[in-house]
Image (tube, rainbow, N blue to C red):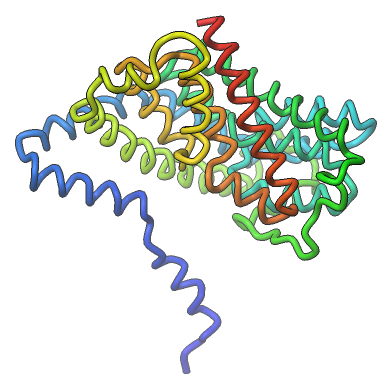
Amino acid sequence: MVDTSLIPQRLSRLRPDWAWIALGLILLAVAVFERAQFLPTLDFASGALASTAPFILFAVLAIGWLKATGAESLLARAFQGREMRMILLAALFGGLSPFCSCQVIPFIAALLAVGAPLSAVMAFWLASPLMDPAMFSITAGTLGFDFALAKTGFAVALGLMGGFGTMLFKSSAVFADPLREKPTVGGCGAKKPFSGQPVWRFWAHAERRATFRDNALQNAVFLLKWLSLAYVLEALMIRHVPADMIAGVLGGDGIRPILLGAFVGAPAYLNGYAAVPLVDALLQQGMAPGAAMSFVIAGGVSSLPAAIAVWALVKPRVFAAYMGFAVLGAMLAGLGWAALA
């Protein structure tokens, strides 16, 4: 007799991975329609991956260490105490946390369930998708350490702006009764973030060694998948998108390219890691530095996984406020980076 309880698990393993499928289809199209460019495209992508390899390795090991030690449980402490202190710590930890977007859902659901104020949650929500150890490493390796450091600072600043803005208007109709009646709290199967204390010498425990190995492997495959796709797209973009067109639309001084970067980044972004090489290609073709920063800030917060995490838990008016903070913060970040760059 067939054990039907195993069918959902088997089906989940057979679920197609659209990033790998897209990569294969793009390379197939290049091989068919641009045969002479197939090997140069592979050379470009493999060379870019090789140059980024040390940063990928650091990111993979850092995430594995954070997960294996249980250091992420320390984030819970940011949501204890006075509201202003919670906002400050939530924005800071959000900009440095190792959570992926789907892991944010159960984490935030747990925070809201224990009564954490929406202002602190908003600060964490806005900062969290923008930067983490892996993102910092990849960004620094591709766009430069200064850009990565500035993006981290803007991520924290955006969290602060959203947190204090929510606190200031918490009695308004926008933030009154903010939660959906039955929020979706599923995610990556992550355990509750409040349980246990960090174990820094994780290698002494077999279970934690397994956690380190599994998370390192999972994130290595994740980064390889998205960066391979991004570098192939970068090669195609450099070859086919006229640099003068990019310079004409998103280049130059002033606020116009920054505004366009924010409003184009918000709906166009799908994955923060894949966006880094694409932004690098756009910069090479004339994209203004301020527009690049506004693009990655607006796009990171409004990316599909991050937006779904918010939409699943709060009512549409709170989601609209989240998006409003994202676009406004992206424009301010773009202006700030244009002044610094």
